[in-house]
Image (cartoon, rainbow, N blue to C red; front, side):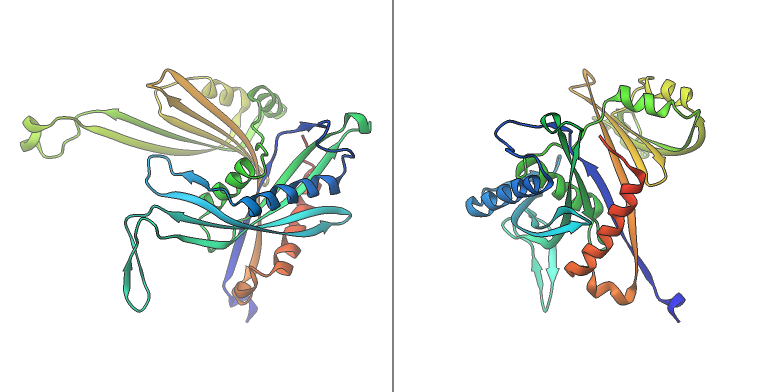
Length: 315
């Protein structure tokens, strides 16, 4: 029976680019089509010159590289869109193995990756006067269940930064607080706090006299419900000892993520604020072999765009 068939989910995080004023020389005529053609040109340039695009992992030897990109011209209603297919792999692995008929130990020059990393680009144009139009991109990440979520998001952001030359929107704290204060209560939010500190924590007292250093790492994640917004603001501006902390404010499928990280021995605080829409597609086990077919992808992504349009998250 159908209700007994196993179900899977495809998450679709949605990222916004920075809002860009119309640039002289970039677009003679700013239209959805000219924006799409500009993306195609950048991808064509990449495919012709094939530069090395790499993303080292923080404090890791392993790195991610993009090796090929394809695109498919699609549309949502009357708006042209671009479905981008990225081939990317991890290399510089040094350790690990793959077992086929025999066990193969991974070497530094081996590549482990996928050529089915998908991203849909949707152009947005705002304004009444064509001479004062501003534009923005919405990127829909096809986070299928065969991928590691953080990895495919990282690949898509690498594409935007290094190949498409598009900055992902970093929101301003003032505007976010103003929006949050419109409601007296935060329905759902989360704090993740990471700290690292030196402390004697040697369980074997017999070795105490030989101890050189002892470091403790601790990560705490707490979820809250119906918190007064003034309490949230108070906590946000209280700078306790931490190496990294992440605030996640949820409303429907929308997430505001505030990430703060102490750098240079606590002499500098880095703060990043992102807006993410976490939508998802549900499908049956019987459709698992279809998830990389273009028609299946577009049918489902267009349904997500419809959901996104109803929520009207603009610049």
